[in-house]
Image (cartoon, rainbow, N blue to C red; front, side, top):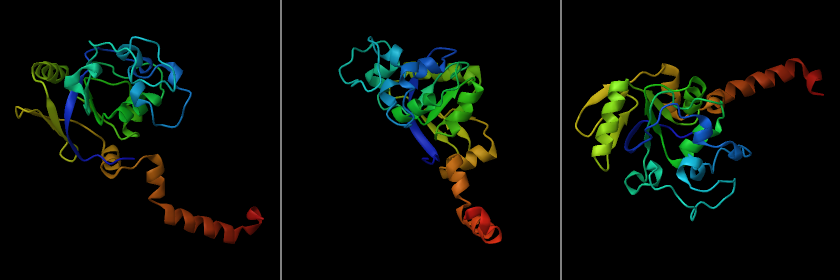
Amino acid sequence: MKAFTRLNGLVCPIDRANVDTDAIIPKQFLKSIKRSGFGPYLFDEWRYADFGEPGMDCTNRPKRPEFALNQARYQGAQVLLARDNFGCGSSREHAPWAIEDYGFRVMIAPSFADIFFSNSYKNAILPIVASAEIVDRLFKECEATEGYKLDVDLEAQTVTTPSGFSFSFDITPHRKHCLLNGLDDIGLTLVHAEQIKAFEAKHKAQQPWLFA
């Protein structure tokens, strides 16, 4: 998993509440479990005017020009700005896979669905809960300023706007440690690889008949 320390990233606004995981990555794309290649299909039904299928080349698909991801000013965005209850609906892990594969590393919203919130951390994405007032401010500033970027400092747990306005965010020490060091659940286990090998060797020596 990619480590996260600090990011000065372009912001893309998705000005809708209750965005569910089927909108983030529609059900027809759930056939693959490779964890990669989902970025082109992120928000597929909102982003394209035709029906998307797995394996489609999205280069020449008809796009909806009003949708933020299709607008030139938001190309290369790494910070996703959203409204209440982002990531609700089914618990499909493909949703954070698609968000990360597209290039987003940070999401900011007043609230997130619980399972989606947890899955995001496990896929190298930092979900930040901010008050509705702060999120409103960020939406207004983003709309008014092309090239609007936020500086996100995980170590300091702060977000700073181009004008210098800054706010802090909460994160558990465990999740912070994992993001700073690029550790998912498998990575956390492999930190103890030598101890695991030693245990297995001892177990085999003490009970060899189990391994015959």
